[in-house]
Length: 240
Image (cartoon, rainbow, N blue to C red; front, side, top):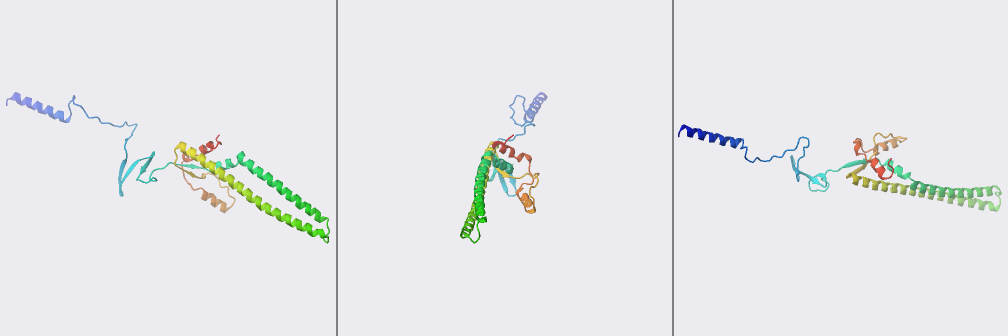
């Protein structure tokens, strides 16, 4: 082989090696996708397998929440808090409830006054009758019967008032729950807990009441963003 031929062969080998490692400027290059630094998004993907000491865990999208496993509760849930004391008090102070309470109070006051008038009238009659007179015993017996009727009516009135207040509280609670449902649906919230803000002062006048204040404050630390009480109040028509 002549010197000229050796030079040509050597040049061809170098060209082949360069093309193999660098690539020809005319050859098609593979496309490699890379996320921009300011938008580090991975996916889309149907799942993410995580290895651990107890095997593999597949993380997937379960109804818009990170989910794992096959059970319906094996998923993340969004959580919020509502200070129910405020909306319940506002509801019970509304015109609908106060009008019913005032109507009952007015009826009870009228009936109470009637009993007192009849008892006072019997007392007046008794003062003008001699104890030895035959009608004295009759008046005393009438007074005893009337007084027992008065006591029975008082017990009945107290029970009726208790049922009325309990009914008001349940109705207010149901409306509160309905409002929470609407707000939770709008904000895509799964679980709403009732709570009392830790910053609220105690209102109890004694030790048992103070202990209850502590028991009712089941959440000790929380981000302020979890409190959706203003949204619920607005849904109930009490927003500013």
